Length: 185
Image: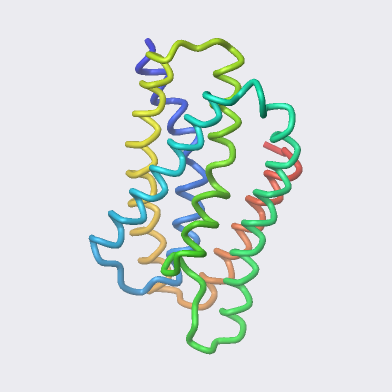
């Protein structure tokens, strides 16, 4: 039963990683397997590390991080989404995607804040490390897979539909950030 819980938790936490990488990948015309693996690894590591940190320091941070996390997640995703829209409208050939260290870091952090909060909640719920270790393992694997699928699908959409897909991707990122901020879903 604990394996099922770990997998469900992992899928729920990595849904935003999938959405963000798919939307960002519309600007990436050619993706090499090594780049996909690298980005999937970075997202998987950041998600897993933040959940672990949340579990380790949960009782100290949970009251402080919850309000700030929503605003920070919104600002980070609004920045990346707004930049994508601006570059698509300008049409100057530059793109804001997951090529630069800054954008990869921003996207990975923005999509992993909820993992920190979940880890803190597990800490407050006195979850044993054996269960948390299973959760962390599932989160790492599922996040890597979802990012790889998101990158491939988003890149394919970007090659097919070009500029309009970049604008749509930017809008979706901003909407995901608004959802984080307002807690709609």
